[in-house]
Image (cartoon, rainbow, N blue to C red; front, top):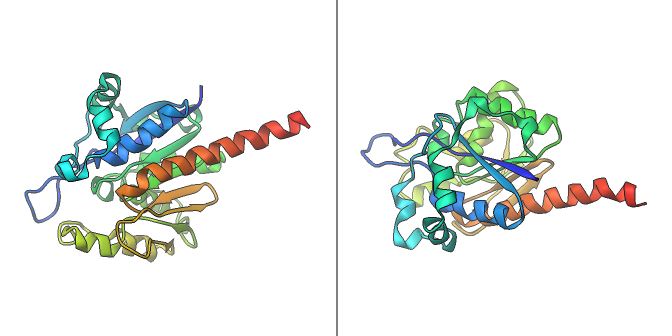
Length: 238
């Protein structure tokens, strides 16, 4: 059985406000069902384990996706979400790829989580892809801290400074993700128009810009895994 690990944030507090954050639900559900429909077995993990916080804004009617509605009627998925494994118990050897959904939470916990940073490097060193969307690429910062220079020259996408300003949360975060990634030497590519879908692939890294990019980023990861599997089979066929 093909296996994908999804790593979710455990962080819910925003800076300078009583507002909450957490997992942006559609950035979990859109990829989750892409993976399920493609025949992958999914394991969910988070720094603290258990049920991750969900950004309340992502549950508002205007942000609800078809996959959100599917999730609300899916007891198996809801149980898995409420019982995520503790991240420090996860081994990259057990999975074919890892995917990091966003929500603002990762810029606090996953960006600093040593276990996550080591895990990302373990996947990449083993030739396995790492995908992330929106604020999920903040997890790459921990990999950078584990291996200085890791992000230098990497072409990635992530939630843009413009989008952060437009959603009104630029004053409630410790740093702007695009700026932070660029400070480490990453080349951050974004859509010409804010909030449109945008995906970048650089070697084993597959990253998406915003919530609308979550499904396309998952599809890009699936395509990469399919192409890799096909390439491995081809010599045998020949």
